[in-house]
Amino acid sequence: MLVPDRDTGLIFARVIDGKGGARPIDWAEAGQWSAAPGETLWMHLDRTVESVDDWLRDELGISEATVEALVSNQTRPRAFREGDTLIAVLRGINFNPGAEPEDMVTLQIWAKADRVITLRRRILQAPRDVLDQLHRGAGPSSAGDLVTEIVEQLVATMGGSIVDMNERIDELEEDEDDLDVEEVLDVIATIRRNCLGLKRHMSPQHEALMQIARDPPNWMSDANSRDIRETIDRLKRYLEDIDVSKESVLVLQDDINNRAANRSNHTMYMLSIVAAIFLPLSFVTGLLGINVGGLPGVHDPDAFWVTVAILAGLLGIQLMLFRRLRWL
Image 1 (cartoon, one colour):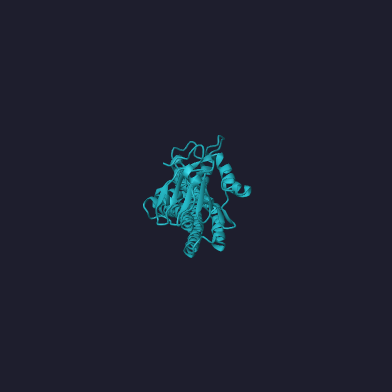
Image 2 (tube, rainbow, N blue to C red):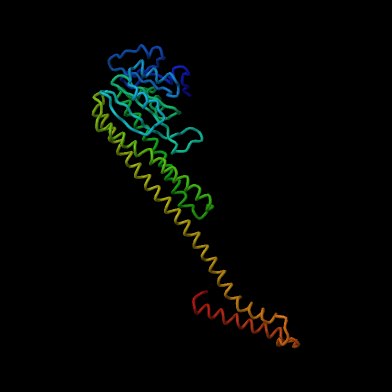
């Protein structure tokens, strides 16, 4: 695991050799580094270290407003240019333990033709994936390739999260009858929160990438611009998938609610039928149970069975009437 330096905030620094590989350098070497033909310096920093903003301002000569954008916690995705320098604030899926997909991690990028600075507050998977590519000798070969690859990795991880969410929805639709209703509703609520969180962050990210595609710096090649446009199209499809997922869980939730309402209505209907059947019987037995003189059959030993027969006949008449009315 890559641990940031407590004094400088440096997580790692690599000099990309232009052939898909890179060599590591330390903080002192990075400070004295000068570009050789075909080389690009990539520094990945922890922006929570207090000295980072001073270093960006004093050593790289970055303006105060841009430094604020690179180290601020106001992390709405956006992108803009300062001359031939590209500044972007992007977000990626949080794969840290205990995190939810909608709890996204911000990555700030400051990039020139021969130098790329990336900054993060929490651990993010995309830079580590690109670093692994460089270790294998199959990584980006220029600053444009590096920025493009990082953007692609950020969007690709979003796609994986959306696919997992859709698979979970399919499982719920298939096993709906076998699962506890409360459990299904809890999962649906979680998926809806994930959809809202992803949509809230991915929509401005789409606009940020559109800004990069509309006004790319000169050091980004035509292939880089084409890859950025393809990434934008992929992100747009993911946004559409999120809308579909949200509608799917709403349909599933409506189905569960309708089934519960139907079961409740059926139960209430049956209770009403039972009450309607026993109401006349209860009236007759209550009338015969009043403690006043003159009740018929008080001294007749057969009166009980006569009363039972009358009640049975009344019950039969009720059942026939209910069937004719199609209540049963």
